[in-house]
Length: 591
Image (tube, rainbow, N blue to C red; front, side):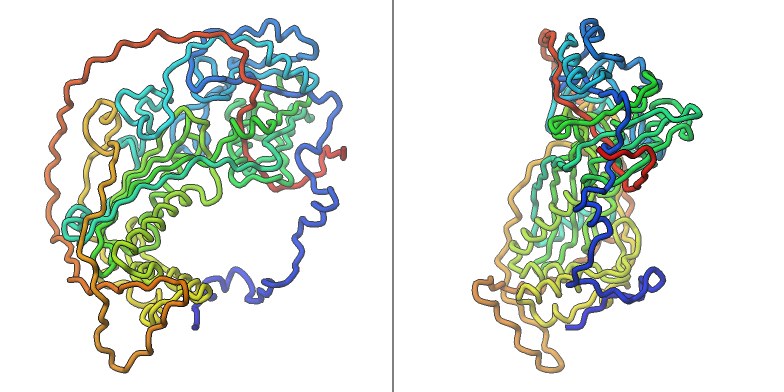
């Protein structure tokens, strides 16, 4: 079988002389790794290096009534107590560097904590042991507040407010909606014309990146009132900009040096350890080291956010998907970090690599009292791709189709219009699944073996359909109890339909080759009967929007008396920044 690899697309980017697969080519960094000479941030040693530890919340959600560090500041080795008021600009959001979103997260919390491990105080001491002992001596009086850990529970009108910058527990999109919308075509009309409705619910839990090297940074004074920061960040200039903003200094006073990253996978971009290390250096005039231990990395290191997806598909008996609806919930944790961007990225990926003429999506960035989420491999796409491909298998089973042939039937072809109104180009899903089927000895019929991403697209499939829009989900409506997007979903069983009949292809001009028989142990599929062509609804004016009338609110339950306690803050560390790949020998000394 011939496969088109589209090499001309890369003609100006590289020579066509790649011949590495199957060879034992040595990585550029392999020698440094096996000899122990690869430079990591923690290989930089300084005389009088101070250590930093944080006082952290043991509660999911609590108000800070008082913090007593009088005993800690007089303990042996303690050099400085860093309080929230010592942070020059103690409010930030990572994407503020791109003017996206509002500042919502303090470097050190002064009034309220919203997740277990949130820092309220930092202690700088001569040794790590001295810093830990001082942390244990700090007394914090907490007023424990109700917390919420589930994304759909957080969307209910009576849910506790997690993030007071976003009091509806959702990120605000376009200063208008509490979710990101995608509208393409008319899904409701298409659902009414579909032979089957197939629904599914899919969920992915938070995942810790678990790098061998935990997050950390070392800051030291330089000449000319500058500070050098050796860091494990994956995003050197991102961390530089974040530190400059939090510390309210010009970025030209900060000299960031990266190096070999001991594992990151997206978990070293949040830029939390660098500002703290530099601030401690500024306040003490001495080199300072802030490195999470393993417990902190697991508890406060930002994971891949949990996701929950509801999919609803309108399908014809011949296997064509004519409508797809998404409702997605992305668990951002207590603060925004990068999650709002993940929703934009994920929504732009919908409905997956398939031509579906009617698509609707409502995707929410939800605040809960969990550890704030961040990037991880395939950021923004991995979770919904899992949902899409699981749903594709489910639909193929419902209509009795070979799942590989089902994907080829619905795949994008060159010239198709995507749901976000861009023409599909350089498509290759068909070729990829053909090769995969061949390698796996998975039987597909000749007509699907001969399909191509370069044939069958465009034309009517390239036209932007009449699209029904709505004003559901305006900021604050859901919190006020008015109906709209984001209501808790339930999944109904798939619409029953008669079992598909055996597929009979039209008579070909020449006798076709016999269809391959399934290999031993592989399933045989009944090929569906041809269905009447789906007819999109004629363009029409969208119905007028009738304002929803808010129901009378139920009587408020009696508020429980706030729980109060004085605790020794959790010694568990929490926080995680970014990573980098730049090596330097400046100030470098081998242990």
